[in-house]
Length: 355
Image 1 (spheres, rainbow, N blue to C red):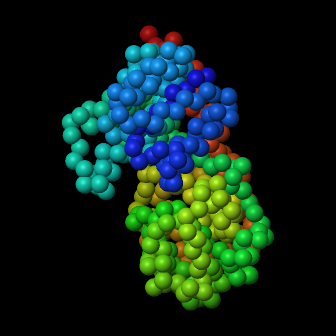
Image 2 (cartoon, one colour):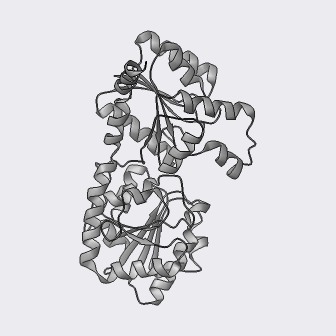
Image 3 (cartoon, rainbow, N blue to C red):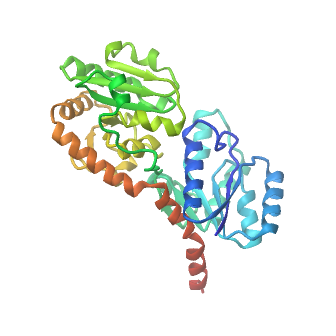
């Protein structure tokens, strides 16, 4: 199978050190592992992209054009229509809403028309959450699959009693972990409040953070230096060694979210117990006291109580962590790649079934 995998977002090239780039690269690798010939097109210019697609097409037709949705970009979809190739669109966020909310961007009629065209023309929409699926449906999409971000189990896996952990964390402490580039919506100060309260209650807790951002500035008012360790940004393959030190992976979002956090699946694959607020798409696969602990969104006290519960009940923590690992196996990039590669067959079946 020959797949034209298109990304026109200037900020998401596969060699960039950010979550979206990890997603892009990981899915391409998973498709290749499953036998697909993946032709990568990371070209933001429309005319140049069309030329590149046309040249590659002359070397052999595509079985699928797969695109990561970028604002105002429909060249790949129109090429797929012209060549009569199935087209799949990966939607990670409501870009029109995000652009106006976070980037002071005023969408134009062209952007709106382009989004509607893409959503309605796609043979398959891969939405990272149910909320994104609902958003796509509101734009006219009909063929939608909810497909959360995945994890590479060959990179992220449990590392019990690792030398790295012993070198970073005082013995006997519950390790609460957070990794990634710090963003305002991550709620890191909320986490600082909860950890401060847990430590004040006598919980032997240590925070391990990995990544770029104002970690020191935002956390120092709450957590003493003796109870936190920060590691600067490391390559994604290497960060797995640090995530393998986590006992707990908390999510601190204060409002329902539409995205699919990479860090959640990665932490689960390493055996970290998710401590999460109600209201996220993770409720589709995380179950209270089975593979995670929940707290009411915004409740510092309840999050602190989750930490205390996990610190005092090692057996329960191990059970929840083992269950999280099993759940993460259903979130692999390979399983996502299999769904993507099935699009041409399903598109052909739908065409044959239509009157």
